[in-house]
Image 1 (tube, rainbow, N blue to C red):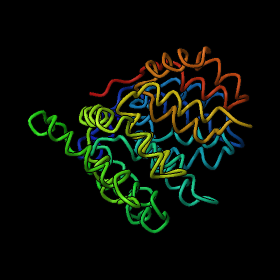
Image 2: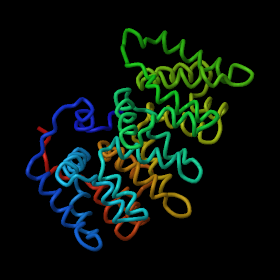
Image 3: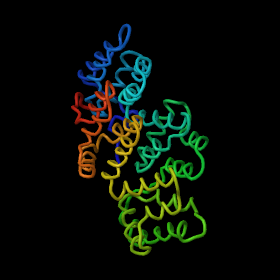
Image 4: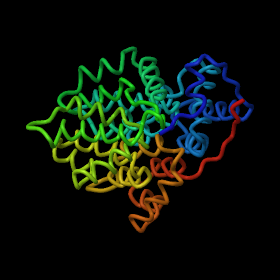
Length: 333
């Protein structure tokens, strides 16, 4: 699944960024909103909220060029709470926002696995590479090393395997029906077909499989073993590990319903998980129209109505801007 806008790749390819007058004007408005004592939060929301991820990234890069300070650092010092968390995410490129989320999910009080696995699973190898570079830029440490040190058990294996960018690019002459049957058997023998689970073989085979190939594996697994891969995962894994692997499989089989469910889980329960909601809506912005449709079909209420009903204040105003269709203020030249 491709989530990063063009500027995310161009920064790390050392391609020169060009900025329109509209981007410069947005930077000037932000600077004025943060001048003096206190911050004009409404002005920040008005400037940053409605823009596309690519525009927001360009604003962040340009702001640092013009004012010699990170836009994220600026808003971090001026805001707090759920609003401050979301505002920081929209003040960065998507790779940097994801690096921020995953760092705090690992380094906070207790590891927040539910914030980690949607970032690293179901991503292209190119985006995993950009994420790791963005993480190093921000924290001067290797993401794979930190994950290796801070995570444990089966979940550790899943995340560290994903960070190795192991997914094989789909090629019809390689990802044949025969290959799918072979991989289905490997997964079975590593899980349900043996005493104990060979987590390494199970995880490696799953995460190496691109979506179309995984769909073929699912068909064959169902036909041969009379149930699907998610059943096999839930039989062999538990807790966040089962959730992560099931998410990966479902993302390949039924992406929009899977992402609608991910967002619904952030809204369910006693109190909304604003961190998970913010991270999901920022990350999956390119596909929000499809996710909104799936959400309303499943839940009989629009995603916009549900989010509006679960939030309030400045956070509500900003998250609604992120959720709504953005207007593009700058073209990437």
